[in-house]
Image 1 (tube, rainbow, N blue to C red):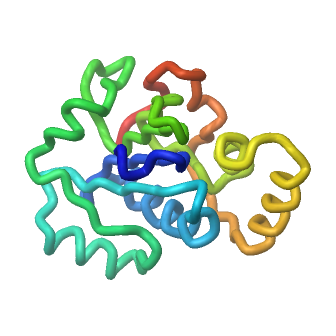
Image 2: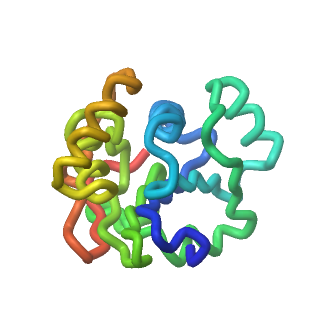
Length: 171
C-alpha cells in the first residue's frame, strides 16, 4: 500500500462467485471512472479462489473498464488484512478497507457497502476532499457525472475513525 501514500485508498476483497460482489464490483467500477485520480484510488483484489480466466470473464461480463485487475494469488493479503465478520467470526466477501492518505486504516466493512449511494459517496467525499468550499464544488461536478444504482446496504455504518471494524452482512 505504500505505493498509494498521499491518496485515500479503497481496498475491496472479492471473488467472482460472491453474490454481493456481483453488484458491488460494477458499482465500484462506475465510482472509479468518476472519483479516481490524484487523491483517490480503488484497489479491487480478487481472492485466490478465482483464476485469472475467472477474473477476466467477470470483468468482461460485467463491463468493468475502470478498475485494475488484481489477484491475491495465495490469499496472504486477504488473510492478513481482512477483518472477520462480527457475527460469523469468519472472513467474508465483499470486504472493504478504507485507508487514509497517510496509510492508516480508517475502517472496514464486510458486505455490500453501497459506496455509490448518497451516504457512501458523502463518506468518500469527506475523506477525499474534506469539508471546504473546493470540496463542495468538486463534489457537485462529479455528482453530475455519476449515475446512481441500487444497493442493498449503506456505507453510512462503515466507519469508525482510525479503527478497523467489521459491520454488516457478508456475501
